[in-house]
Length: 266
Picture (tube, rainbow, N blue to C red):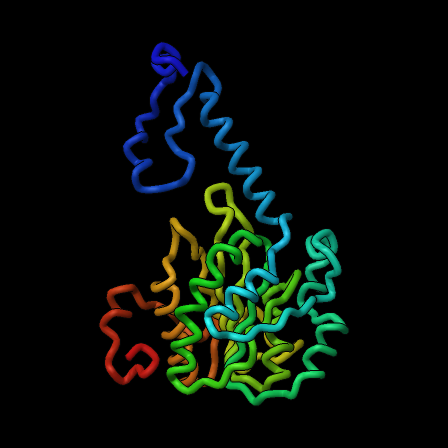
């Protein structure tokens, strides 16, 4: 675009606000239309969001990276056979396949306090980018505080509720699932964390869970997300429940100033 072309773009009076948000505001206009650059950037963002949904996650690569960190994992499959079925049948993404159940039954059931589940969800890119670095912070914290953990469960085509059956199998109090969130046009790689206390397959509902969302480069950082999750774990261990009745009204400042009695944050 030449200097003369740029001078034909009518600037938006909100342009100064773009420094505070990645939202598409103050795009300007050329006549009655958006500038060419804004149109192309929108098309690119849409393509990245579609790719995040449809490109398969490299589960083998993720398992290898976790192994290099010193953590075992096992790869399981939901009843959604492929991505098309996964998108059309959310119910099947909440259930373990027969092969996954066989895999769990073939392993000696290890009594566990917590299970950590990683599912591709609606953004393989989110898990590819953020699962390993977050787990490298979370797993040492849990182990250091005496939590017994089975291998990390990597679930293909999994929805949030699929963690309930895994937690029930291991008789675990805590169920932590990392999942790729529905991509937006400004955040195709956003990861979410869902936490359930005493999860039970077929019984636990969304009201029983706490959600920490928007974990990505321009959103919530790994350290911030970890502090929120550890706060929820500590509170649920004291109160005996999670979900809508467990209010996370903390701020970063409040989390930094937790009393020493909070053993998970010491």
